Length: 513
Image 1 (cartoon, rainbow, N blue to C red):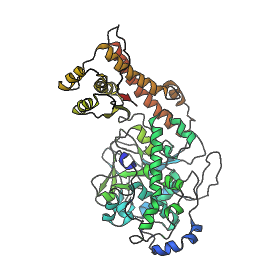
Image 2: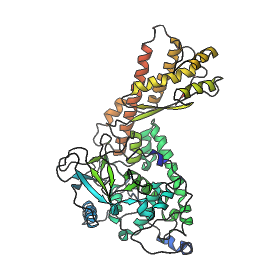
Image 3: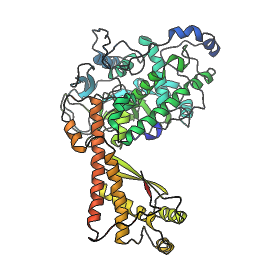
Image 4: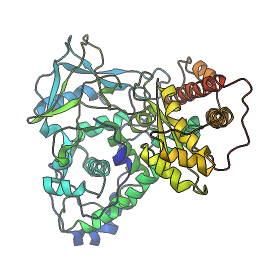
């Protein structure tokens, strides 16, 4: 697994593609598809409620105050998933599928999770899923070269896998993947904290993230999903000569945008990045993987591709019945929330960003840009503030900010001729730099509607809605890092001479955002 930020930059389509199903052998021409388009409109999938993950299923829940009838069933669904896998070649394993209730409310169905069926030692193989039960682009497309072509600046892997599962679900029990799809629907893209990705939150729920850059990141990601959805018809119309597998309407007529987004987010929440495999196999959906396996930032166990299978070797001892964790890669909490719907309080990879830029109106802009580049910085520089290393991040920002405050040509000549990020600063000018930095952190903290202490008090409520809980956890951790940065700047101000005052703001001071 990895930080999957790059494939959230949704890519456009310039190559035809439709999906091959191992369980649906019928073939029709693209012309017949177009002739029957109007007739087949009546056979569109049902529009899913917000409780569905892919497209409409048989199980409904209460959402937004409305009670939706659930279908009764005598089948133990999550045991049925494991039984199905055993019937299709899953060898004996050391795990069971268990469930936990959503304690905040009875309106949501329990969360399923993978637990140890017996005591495990570090290095034990918990399970080994045969390749035949793993969904990859190679399996979907039936052709490795086509799959690799697709992944090179074409449609994103997430969209391909989501569209494939949506068409598979239209076949209901005829689909080979029916038990797996049913489990994905049942989980509704929820992480183990029972919260969906904020990509599926309402506007009121997104307000929980006010003040956090994550809110803008969610909206930007959603725009990317919309762009990809709008390209799906291009996929369909260009694909007749290559793939003629599913006799259904074009994607945007078969699936409303909200359904595609739900499927996209569901795939995003459980896709696994396999190492040392071909491009066509690198993104995989493993039925015993996430979201049944919980992610943990300080865990090092990973789903690993071996000969003919994907296996999990545990990185720590487990007692029978304990949930099993895997690593989610070095992702900050903002990414964990968007991708998987959870926040890790003990995430050693958490970070916030500070963007700084030299003023382009500065007469000495080009010289300053050259000095910045010489010291490994850009004219528009993003500083990463890692949790626990806030003071180091502030010290890293100061030479860059001081450079923006240099005004006299003679001072600039001294900077250019010096070795390293050295800018001669009087105590008063240093105070101006530190004042700008501390005011920036204060402004960011003021942008949140709640204080750090209010967040901590709110999190003591066991009845708190999961979405509000994870959002509050995120903003609380962001505020802690911002506060630590502010304290570092204030400490440096205290070290200046007592009579130091900040002069008038420098006309070409760097911009911070």
